[in-house]
Amino acid sequence: MTIPIFQQHTVALVVIFAALLGSVWAASAKAEGDDFVGSDVQAVCDKAVNVQVPVNDIPTDADQAALKNWLSADSYYGNGVKTDYTVARKCAFNERASGDESLFGGSRILMMIYANGYGVTKNLDLAIKFACESGGSTAEVERRVHHLNELKTKPADQPLRACIERRGLPADYCNGRVDVCDDVTNGEREEDCAQRASDIVEAENKASMHNFISSWPAEHQKSFEKLYNVADLYFGVGLHPENSAEMR
Image 1 (cartoon, one colour):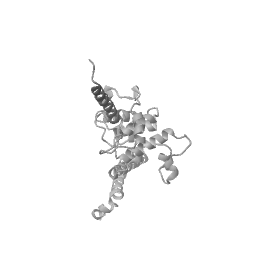
Image 2 (cartoon, helix red, strand yellow):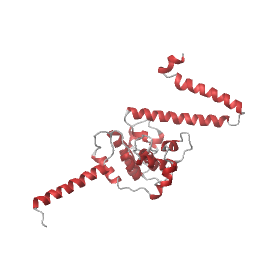
Image 3 (spheres, helix red, strand yellow):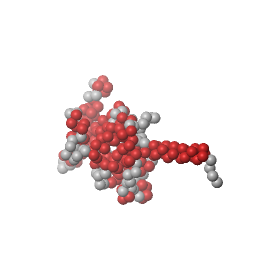
Image 4 (cartoon, helix red, strand yellow):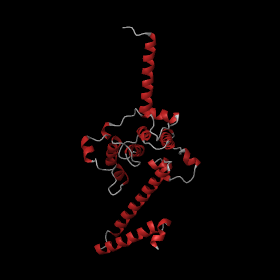
């Protein structure tokens, strides 16, 4: 059967439009609201969408079942458990498949794992793929992708542009270590990052304290822990202006 010329044109246009639309939605960087990232970042994300995760890095069904109630951030940062990047990666894939909503989870943890080469072969192409999925404001997604793409493309002995233009940036950042908090732009996310940093310092301090008193008699350890907790309450809470009236 011969299709009339105008119908052929209509069908062709529909097919082209559908293909273009599918391409845009499949590869678009995930930003909040209805905003779209710039064309340069979109081009990087369009390319990254086809990057494949190594088969051996993907958790098995048994892994998913065993870790379904675990949080990737706990194993990544060592929050209450031993740092284990393999467990963090497997949990992060679970979270990515289950909504991918947490700032410290899912695609964002995977981005850091592959950007830093923690428990896997370092792979900035994969890190960019997960950065494009990571969400946040348009500015945040753009900064994150630009940051990773610069790490990928710059000569190894050349410092990051931001570290040349601005003083006072963290040494880890300028040495190439990637963290999800490097590029946040939203006040609420900045507060989340500040709290996470505080939690990490607190955990490190408690670990140091326990190591310091580990050889003491048990009753002395208990007494010191009580003193430590009172001091932690005073210096950690009591000196905040909003709590000073209650402490007086």
